[in-house]
Image 1: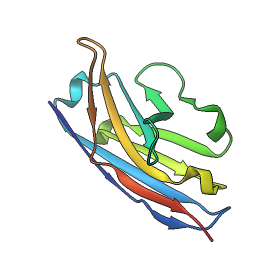
Image 2: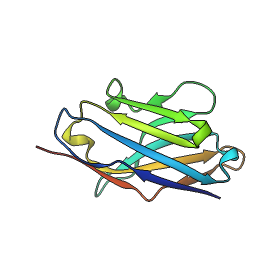
Image 3: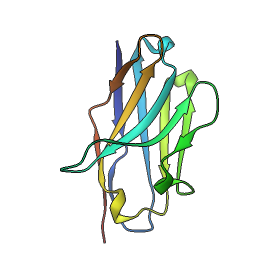
Length: 117
């Protein structure tokens, strides 16, 4: 089992920045990738960014050039630096961890990000 705890959301103005943090605990040695997803009311959860253990991070097209995902494997953590925020970035952001061996996925509790003037 893996437990994930997010922090750092809140309110930002359009064009502003926020930084999300997520720390994992439990069976963290089994994690192969960590990433961020978001969900808005009435919509399915969507992929935002992912940082695998091997290879380069990858992003949803709408956040490329604005968001940066980083991993700190020594701390079992993943971060999402969100710049040039837009109102459409508003949503509940979830940290996710993926274990390839059995294709299991774990989620944090979600954290609200609101972009509004």
